[in-house]
Length: 103
Image 1 (cartoon, rainbow, N blue to C red):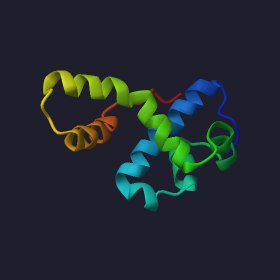
Image 2: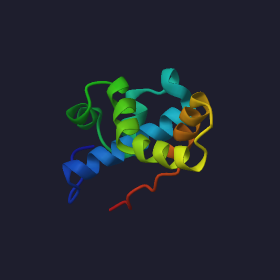
Image 3: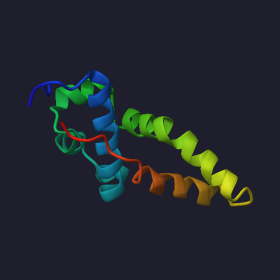
């Protein structure tokens, strides 16, 4: 698996973030392997490491990319909701973020 023709670095990064969210949701953080995330995104391990230094960096990037907006929406809908419930809800909603169309 090499670089995907016609796909920008930004698109590859987003594919990796979406794949990471999916794999983490199915297997948990500890059960998710970097190779599984790369395969789910349709890229090589090397491509993954060109964008992220580690599995931990992947999950942080996914939360940074999609978490603030989701958290703001959840807080607006229910400002008295406990923080732990909000964080769980954000994690679940990350799965609902639309995946860019495959080329």
